[in-house]
Length: 96
View 1 (cartoon, rainbow, N blue to C red):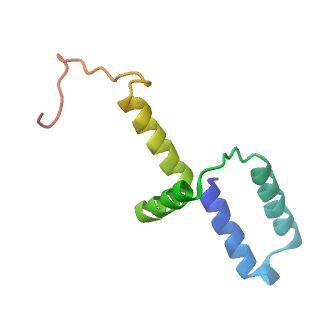
View 2 (view 1 turned 90 degrees about the vertical axis):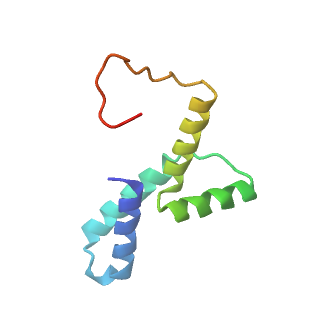
């Protein structure tokens, strides 16, 4: 289950708290506590934080996913990731 899906489930439970069984609520709260304990965050400058949140919302993706994309692109651009080698003799679809 992704964090986003879990957050949606928590939101839904909060909107109809009277309909959620005690056992289901207990499970949700324990999972939330585990996720909060296991968050490996790092502090960002407020301007950077705002920019990331805005771009993630604009792209309709999670902030963590955006950070992964940015890091992967930066590492690839600066040759910190292995270069993908394309076999010149292999057939490819489309045009170059």
